[in-house]
Image (cartoon, rainbow, N blue to C red; front, side):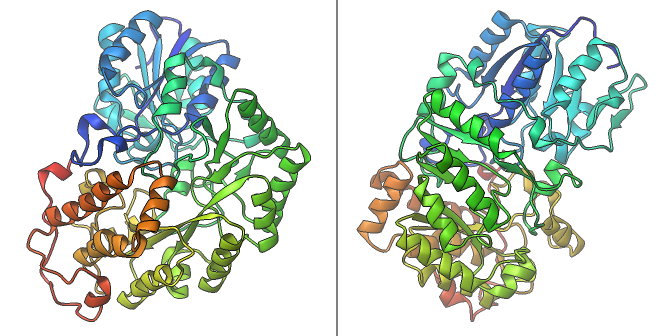
Amino acid sequence: MDEVKHMIKKVLIAVPPLVNSDEDPDPSRPNYELLRLVSPVEPMIVAANLLDRDFEVELFDLGVHIENRYENLRERLETFSPDAVVMVQSILTFITSQDWDGVQVFDLAREVSPGVVTVLTGNTATNYPAKAVSGDVCDYSLKGEMDFTVGDLMETLNAEGNVEDVAGVIYKKSDGETYVSQRYPAVDMADLPMPAYHILDDTHRAGYAENLERGKIRYPVRSNKYRDIMVARSCTLRCSFCSVAHLRGPKQKYRRKPMERLIMEVEQALEQGVEEIHFFDDLFAESEGELLEFAEALAKRNLKFPWLQAQGMPLWPVTKDALTALVETGMYRIIAPYESGNDRALQKCAGKIHSTVAHHHDVTMWSHELGLEIIALFVLGMPGETRREILDTLLFAEDHPQIDYSVFSIATPLVGTKLQRSVLRNGQLDDEDKLNKVIKRTVALYRTDSFREYELGVIRAFDWARINFPTPERREKYARMVGITTEQLDELIAHSKEVFFRFYPDFKGPYSFKDLVDQPDLYEDAKPIIPGSMYG
């Protein structure tokens, strides 16, 4: 598309759902897991920048509209009559269950408004930059951070300028060839506008308060009037299983908002009725000094409210003094990315080069003493990890009853990660398309000389339940922490085992990795059966 047939004045930002209930790869999952939302952190920044450029902007979050989703979208398209429809996911680096190309949204937009300009951003636009444009799903894609490039593209089209000047742009040229920019956008956090939450209508405001992440570790237990706020982007580490560097752009280094600007955003949220805040960052802090600076800035303005770090608190900068200061500002839960219970696996396989198991133990004990809820994050099945090192991880979780809940994620070779490059190079992933179809981090997609797929499944389904829920008191506390009933928790436990047996219907046990660790060849030929119901 070389020119725009009319001036772009109105832009509709469409936000994809966290779970695409229309094509759910696991249709048996509990219904409340489909009703999941996080705040539209990055769409609100895109909206603010467009407003600064004098565009008229509205937002339609498909996750808010579970019932009659596309009927409601049609109505919005008809009443607003946008000149452009842009897909912007809630947070670029928040990995959802499925990749989303927006084909249903764009098809409907073109049906209602022939000539509308369609733009895809987010994971799919960055992971597979030419795919959507080449397939005529949309007119343009923008890879990487889209805070300013959406506005750049709109203004370039209006001026009939050269769209190739827009960083990260992908489009189909007049000769039919697809142009893919080799540049990633560069964003200075100090330049970001204040998010435009004032444009949300009553339906969206109610939706974000009602459709919380029930059953998930980010559930805002203190108040449903909550908001996600981003402090920093990118990371100083390059963990093997993490796609942040790829999605943000390989040259986008770790960046923080100026503290004054961050405090303005916190105060804006509180003034707008927000009662709990989740800081949703790629890396919340890289040093004790940054943690103390954050706590001191809140204290200086007499700001105290319930909060947590939603993507996981980096542990290597944490000291007892820093943790104490954070708790005094209202932090009530620590989501702790321990990753492994073995130093070698932690540093060499995961890439947490500053971390040690001994320090993780100390953080656990300090957190418990300070009364924090403790959520542990572990990653299993990294290339190079041995069976004994996997066992060390389970033993760390078991040996720390102070941990309220342990998440055991199976290492998934996401696009752009060291893990993906490793398994492809070693021929361990026979079908790369599995990455887009199997539920991420819940199913092993490859095996190594040290472990088999089914063994990781045993941990995920059986050791997970055994370690986390040994007593009624533990079950009740966890259910409260994630906003579900104990009956719903029982259903979740049963569902995890049901999923395991869909993949391994002939498995007869043992149902604990401890009992499998010395039997590496017990089910040598057991490869997962991939039922059609597990695919989108």
